[in-house]
Length: 132
Image (cartoon, rainbow, N blue to C red; front, side):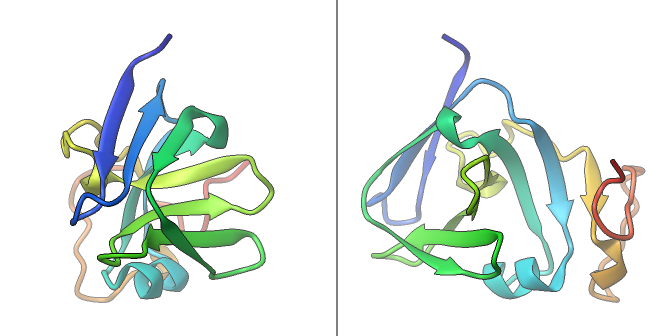
């Protein structure tokens, strides 16, 4: 069994466990993430969906054909971005109990970055997604 990291929403009604290491850790600056998170970007750790267990009642909103946004139905905390094809789920970094468990390794969709956001962390930046 791999490392298990836990987290949850603001009110505690939803708790989750993520097992193992994330596939990647990115900051997304796309407009969908900005709107869904109510923030200039979405900092998240991407896991295989099978690595995540969730307890508590969540709601979901289909923000695109490919992604559902998952939130706590009680307090509204935005927790996950779940790919509808069943492959991966992005977990908001600040929702982990140890909010320093992961550090982002790159920025994606900087072409849609809010103008006043300054990226001076020396991480790789991609205009859209990471090239294949």
